[in-house]
Length: 630
Image 1 (spheres, rainbow, N blue to C red):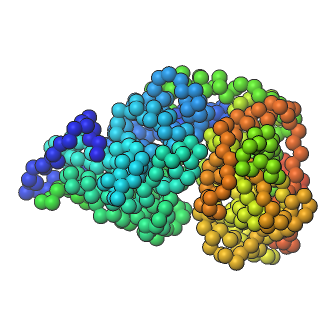
Image 2: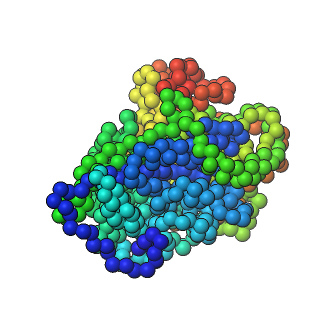
Image 3: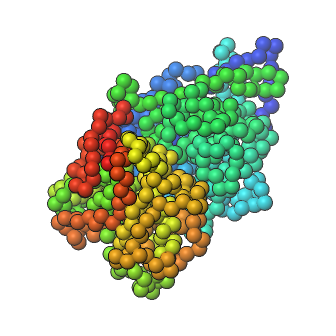
């Protein structure tokens, strides 16, 4: 257990006997989540300002929220260090000095934080080095170096919990000493997702189990209030093994008073939040407890207002109000905090020099605007770079000599991240930022040995991106909103069609829900039906290669040492000027008289000529909308 400003064991503070009239105290909890290395309102991929982004913008809301309340605490809920070229630069080159995100948080006076899954993307050494400069408790209750028989016996990577000793002022102006316990939790899939950089150094206990174990210790030490920093989404209400979205089971634990949730980049409470049993998206309650999720990249500030009343049993939550405050007001974002803007200026300048390095030239615009409805150059270019690298480096591996295929997914394809979240590389000179725009993650190159039968399963899972379409129906939603675009990674080097009249075999979490369902038809290699027993080397990324073991069991795997972005940059330099010819290797099975609707960027590139599209009025969120004739 970590106690602020004191690493020695201390006995729990004994509160004074309550007065005849119970004291009432208002405490405001403020929270950021999923900042993804976004300090300034700047889009490094497009190399232009991006009002409404970044911690510097959220800092303005933080200052306002603090000014409105007597007692406040500020938390961060993880996924802090990865997500922009600035984060990549500090991980790859390790410039001297404090990490710019840590410096910004120090300036804002955070009270406690936890880590998210993407904070492990650069490995444990970078994480340890970065967090060494944090002057606030950074906790993780379920990131474990050695698992014990129970949570209390685990040897955790970070302190499993913290106790904040704070003086608070009640409504009568009287001071009280409160002890606030803080838990930190992250998805149990982290050791799989980041196996390439973590190896066997980290294990993660299931979220609800770890929370329950360490919660008991906090209560035993006399905490008046316990807050769960839960870097996990809002999913099923009951605890399940290896549950990724476990905020509801955590909230249901007796002794949890408030929950900060995240990971899924949604806003809660909010109109239109996907319905969940046990979740009240109007009042901001999970299992009856106040809870907030503050979007991503500084888009919102989570605010939980608690009215605490003290009786003979101690302090309890009498009332709560919850909101996720947006940085945009009446369509315009608040101004970024000048102090944080100045503080981040040197790191910003260094990042700009880095991303502006020239790497090549393109004769055409390369964008991901239509990557969810047809093959596009944005994915074909990545797939080609991966396959070429694999051909040069696979000798001596278990995959040597196998035919090479290549899978690539559209990481930037709108969705929850909004209408600006697309890859869009203009024709003309290319810089490093354009390669980063096409491949935003620091994943390493990898390959797995798959048979034709396993490849068919891979593609069935990818095809879960699409909703079932009723033949003859008009203007049906094309995409399943629960499925992230990165789950759609078609394999180039094959050809196939997708029958949208059939239901998906897998759900959005990769679980088989309809064993009899098959959407992938006419799967061919070199113009012949794919032999289910034929082995292939499938180029992909380290994240996807590791997760294959969850779908297929142990597989012969090759993990490279280079990030795919570096490989892509060299491929662009080697093949410039780019004039990509995109093979139409996948298509939807024709459905005469049937139409579907999809959304894309506000000013999309020219669509593939073979698509029958009708442009429709834009969505309220700013996406352009198209009708697709199937």
